[in-house]
Length: 128
Image (cartoon, rainbow, N blue to C red; front, side, top):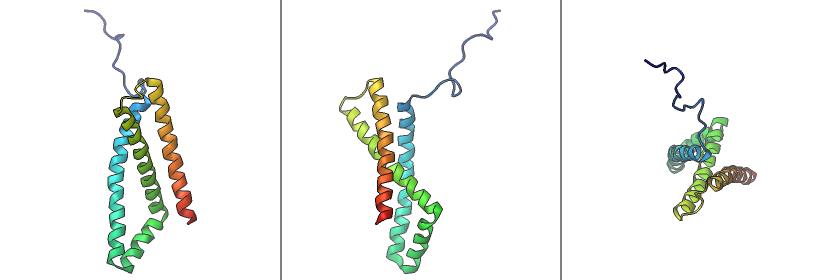
């Protein structure tokens, strides 16, 4: 019987690096879930506003805390990432951008756009 200790192993996470497009696909799904959960915060805020001043102050107190601001920042980032990546998918649906180098380049553009739009929205929001 032949010795099989030196046969190649299947790639795993310690050996195989996921391409950017695969990571962005996973992130697109995760941000979709995050947006759904974040919408519950928006619904809570709207219901509290309709319920009365005391309820609204409670929600405002939570959203104004460091944890609430962190959640809102993450929700904003998820929103802009999902939007920018959705535009990338529309371009793909039109039949463009399937070259590996081009897909990587547009993926990096999506990441920069999501970060930049998030920062811009927060700068404008906090300055008003």
